[in-house]
Length: 386
Length: 220
Image 1 (cartoon, each protein chain N blue to C red):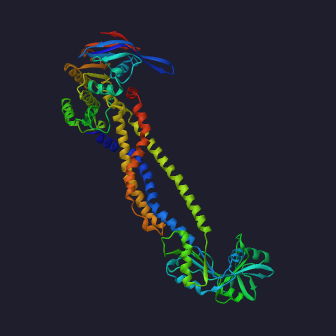
Image 2: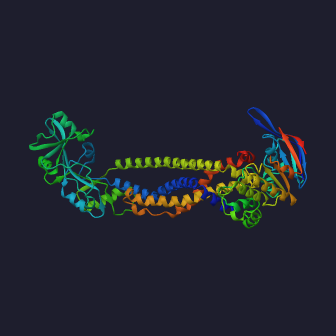
């Protein structure tokens, strides 16, 4: 019988304490493994999201004067509605939402309004079940901006005349806080009729658009790539990149990383304290045993080895179980979270190696103080406590 | 030979200083059977703990085989204790997760990395415990527990056995058996120092030392 046998016999004798300690290590190890296993997929996914965000595109007529575009919010020129179909069929690009609009500022009932004609949102074939990002307006109906409805006292269900065309108010929109409050949203064909621009649009919004061409290029190149590719099929159009959303996402990503940076050390400290408390309970139960071993002539180092050896066993077992649990969790839930880069999720066996090194050290360090206190007690005092 | 010179042990308590041992001078020859007597709190246990090298005295010295044990380093004293002293407790102090043979062999662990189970088996046979060697302490009677504890104390072939009320939890029959084992150890040349209230121990003793309030009151 060796010291190792003694360690295992004690473990078998006090199973609950041992299992609770292992559970603490499993929790800490699994958290690390989940974090790092999903890390690669998360990183790729974030890059992809960033790139996709960079490809939130506004496709507008080529002749558009950008100064006027930014000041009015739309192009004064138009392009053929057929561009929407061309874009939708374009190989090498994927998107989640495609919205074609025709917008023009005009006077109506003594007020400046923005007439906005919309085609029902085009969704890719594989995403037809997803919810559209914007509402769609049926022919003969309009959605009225908040300010217009309030100033003119128009209510849902009213029949209104818009520059000679009678339309039914399907909805009065809630306040948006931007120029949407002075918009009249109608079906594209109705607005085309009103503005006498049949078959014309002046913008296509392509959201979460993904360029599958030259995907290795960094996101800064994407505008160039997208412009070049689109120029071949949409010759009279140009592309504007919406960057603000990407920047918001980047901030959100930084916030999430900072949040995880706080949570993980917190969990590790809690698990460490958990092990320390369990070790304290264990050493308290074993005070007589420690005193006896001192009486038998065991030196403090060898007694400490019994406790720290147990911690190492806890750490090793927790590392293996934590790796398995963490990997299983990452592989089971990861694909739901990282839909695009799910294939990057795979067992990271290097984490097992690191877990096997770090977890026993973690368990031993957590146990060190209670073990030192237990061994430091006078054996005579311990043995008197009968 | 064991020699105690002007041994004092004080405890600081809330009520003040308690003199557990007060100016103890004592010589014990090799092979003697010493019985310590005295009321509770008279200093018997403190004296045994000090003799075992487990309780440093406030002042004075203890020589065992000409070695001043409290001038040794702590690891050296632990080794000295493992090689020379066996201790028997009233409460047995058996390790609950080890069986009888492992509890006995545990004594060897202080001296080597492997515990000598075959040797322990032989010893337990001489104590009539061969049928219990794979039993855990919880499965033993009080008498069997104390026999196991004595076997453990003897396992490293010590020169000295220190026993603190070893019969305190035993019925008269088992108490007599335990004292018999200690007498056998003495007969084989060992020194026994035992704190006990067993009247029969008087008959086995070479000397009876009575303690009171930490001082030797009587020696016969």
